[in-house]
Length: 167
Image (cartoon, rainbow, N blue to C red):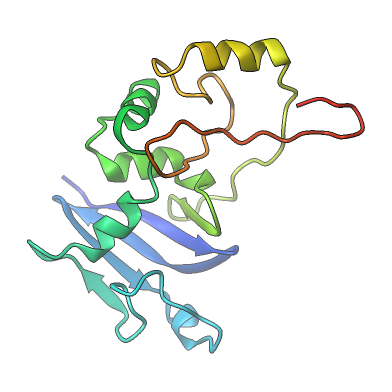
Protein backbone atom coordinates (compact mmCIF):
# COMPACT_ATOMS: atom_id res chain seq x y z
CA UNK A 1 0.00 0.00 0.00
CA UNK A 2 1.33 3.43 -0.89
CA UNK A 3 1.37 6.31 1.52
CA UNK A 4 -1.59 8.68 1.55
CA UNK A 5 -0.78 12.39 1.76
CA UNK A 6 -2.78 15.55 2.40
CA UNK A 7 -1.57 19.14 2.34
CA UNK A 8 -2.62 20.97 5.51
CA UNK A 9 -3.49 24.64 5.16
CA UNK A 10 -4.06 27.05 8.03
CA UNK A 11 -5.84 30.26 7.10
CA UNK A 12 -5.00 29.61 3.45
CA UNK A 13 -1.27 29.04 4.04
CA UNK A 14 0.43 25.68 3.58
CA UNK A 15 1.51 24.63 7.07
CA UNK A 16 2.61 21.08 6.38
CA UNK A 17 1.88 17.61 5.07
CA UNK A 18 -0.12 14.86 6.73
CA UNK A 19 0.97 11.33 5.81
CA UNK A 20 -0.48 7.90 6.59
CA UNK A 21 1.43 4.77 5.62
CA UNK A 22 0.36 1.34 6.87
CA UNK A 23 -1.64 2.91 9.70
CA UNK A 24 1.30 5.01 10.92
CA UNK A 25 0.55 8.71 10.79
CA UNK A 26 3.02 11.54 10.49
CA UNK A 27 3.03 15.28 10.04
CA UNK A 28 5.81 17.51 8.73
CA UNK A 29 5.71 21.28 8.99
CA UNK A 30 6.73 23.27 5.93
CA UNK A 31 10.02 25.13 6.36
CA UNK A 32 8.31 28.39 5.42
CA UNK A 33 5.70 27.86 8.15
CA UNK A 34 8.32 27.09 10.78
CA UNK A 35 10.33 30.17 9.81
CA UNK A 36 7.40 32.53 10.25
CA UNK A 37 7.50 34.30 13.66
CA UNK A 38 3.66 34.24 13.67
CA UNK A 39 3.54 30.46 13.18
CA UNK A 40 1.92 28.31 15.83
CA UNK A 41 1.76 24.54 16.37
CA UNK A 42 -1.28 22.53 15.34
CA UNK A 43 -1.48 21.10 18.85
CA UNK A 44 0.74 20.76 21.94
CA UNK A 45 1.64 17.21 20.89
CA UNK A 46 2.65 18.44 17.42
CA UNK A 47 5.00 21.21 18.51
CA UNK A 48 7.16 23.48 16.39
CA UNK A 49 10.22 22.27 18.33
CA UNK A 50 10.75 19.71 15.57
CA UNK A 51 9.71 19.66 11.93
CA UNK A 52 8.62 16.02 11.62
CA UNK A 53 6.29 14.14 13.93
CA UNK A 54 5.72 10.40 13.50
CA UNK A 55 3.27 8.51 15.68
CA UNK A 56 4.48 5.61 17.78
CA UNK A 57 2.65 2.46 18.74
CA UNK A 58 1.14 3.90 21.92
CA UNK A 59 1.42 7.68 21.53
CA UNK A 60 -0.38 8.92 18.42
CA UNK A 61 -0.54 12.71 18.68
CA UNK A 62 -0.87 13.22 14.93
CA UNK A 63 -3.64 10.68 14.37
CA UNK A 64 -5.54 11.72 17.49
CA UNK A 65 -5.46 15.41 16.55
CA UNK A 66 -6.70 14.90 13.00
CA UNK A 67 -9.22 12.18 13.92
CA UNK A 68 -10.78 14.66 16.37
CA UNK A 69 -11.67 16.93 13.44
CA UNK A 70 -14.16 14.30 12.29
CA UNK A 71 -17.69 13.52 13.44
CA UNK A 72 -18.17 10.74 15.99
CA UNK A 73 -20.46 7.80 16.72
CA UNK A 74 -23.71 7.45 14.73
CA UNK A 75 -23.03 10.61 12.74
CA UNK A 76 -19.68 9.23 11.61
CA UNK A 77 -21.38 5.98 10.56
CA UNK A 78 -24.04 7.82 8.56
CA UNK A 79 -21.52 10.04 6.78
CA UNK A 80 -19.25 7.06 6.11
CA UNK A 81 -22.11 5.20 4.42
CA UNK A 82 -22.96 8.23 2.28
CA UNK A 83 -19.33 8.65 1.25
CA UNK A 84 -18.73 4.90 0.89
CA UNK A 85 -15.67 5.16 3.15
CA UNK A 86 -15.07 2.76 6.04
CA UNK A 87 -16.00 4.59 9.25
CA UNK A 88 -12.73 3.39 10.85
CA UNK A 89 -10.66 4.88 8.01
CA UNK A 90 -10.06 8.31 9.53
CA UNK A 91 -7.57 9.29 6.82
CA UNK A 92 -10.07 8.31 4.11
CA UNK A 93 -12.71 10.45 5.78
CA UNK A 94 -10.27 13.35 5.99
CA UNK A 95 -9.59 12.93 2.26
CA UNK A 96 -13.33 13.16 1.59
CA UNK A 97 -14.20 15.90 4.09
CA UNK A 98 -10.98 17.80 4.78
CA UNK A 99 -11.50 20.46 2.13
CA UNK A 100 -14.31 21.79 4.30
CA UNK A 101 -13.26 21.05 7.86
CA UNK A 102 -14.36 23.42 10.59
CA UNK A 103 -12.15 26.31 11.61
CA UNK A 104 -9.05 27.46 9.83
CA UNK A 105 -7.74 24.01 8.81
CA UNK A 106 -8.16 22.75 5.25
CA UNK A 107 -6.83 19.39 4.10
CA UNK A 108 -6.37 18.85 0.36
CA UNK A 109 -4.64 16.36 -1.90
CA UNK A 110 -1.14 17.57 -2.82
CA UNK A 111 -1.34 20.21 -5.54
CA UNK A 112 -5.14 20.50 -5.41
CA UNK A 113 -6.78 23.88 -5.67
CA UNK A 114 -9.08 25.41 -3.10
CA UNK A 115 -12.50 23.88 -2.56
CA UNK A 116 -15.43 25.33 -4.45
CA UNK A 117 -17.17 28.01 -2.45
CA UNK A 118 -20.74 29.11 -2.61
CA UNK A 119 -24.20 28.44 -1.32
CA UNK A 120 -27.49 27.24 -2.71
CA UNK A 121 -31.02 27.90 -1.54
CA UNK A 122 -32.44 25.41 0.96
CA UNK A 123 -36.22 25.38 1.10
CA UNK A 124 -37.79 24.95 4.52
CA UNK A 125 -39.46 21.74 3.32
CA UNK A 126 -36.08 20.25 2.42
CA UNK A 127 -34.65 21.22 5.81
CA UNK A 128 -37.68 19.65 7.49
CA UNK A 129 -37.16 16.42 5.50
CA UNK A 130 -33.49 16.30 6.50
CA UNK A 131 -34.44 16.71 10.16
CA UNK A 132 -37.07 13.95 9.94
CA UNK A 133 -34.50 11.57 8.42
CA UNK A 134 -32.15 11.89 11.38
CA UNK A 135 -30.29 9.85 12.55
CA UNK A 136 -30.46 7.50 9.54
CA UNK A 137 -28.80 10.06 7.28
CA UNK A 138 -26.69 13.10 8.02
CA UNK A 139 -28.10 16.59 7.71
CA UNK A 140 -25.98 17.32 4.67
CA UNK A 141 -26.97 14.20 2.70
CA UNK A 142 -27.29 15.15 -0.94
CA UNK A 143 -25.71 18.53 -0.35
CA UNK A 144 -22.80 19.67 -2.53
CA UNK A 145 -20.99 20.74 0.63
CA UNK A 146 -19.74 18.08 3.04
CA UNK A 147 -18.42 20.12 5.91
CA UNK A 148 -16.92 18.06 8.70
CA UNK A 149 -17.95 19.27 12.13
CA UNK A 150 -16.49 17.26 14.98
CA UNK A 151 -18.58 15.66 17.69
CA UNK A 152 -21.38 13.14 18.02
CA UNK A 153 -24.29 15.52 17.40
CA UNK A 154 -25.66 16.06 13.90
CA UNK A 155 -24.74 19.47 12.53
CA UNK A 156 -25.03 21.40 9.31
CA UNK A 157 -24.00 24.85 8.20
CA UNK A 158 -26.93 27.10 7.30
CA UNK A 159 -26.75 30.66 6.02
CA UNK A 160 -29.76 32.88 6.62
CA UNK A 161 -30.34 35.78 4.22
CA UNK A 162 -32.05 38.56 6.19
CA UNK A 163 -33.04 40.42 3.02
CA UNK A 164 -35.03 37.52 1.59
CA UNK A 165 -35.74 35.60 4.84
CA UNK A 166 -34.43 32.47 3.13
CA UNK A 167 -31.98 29.75 4.04
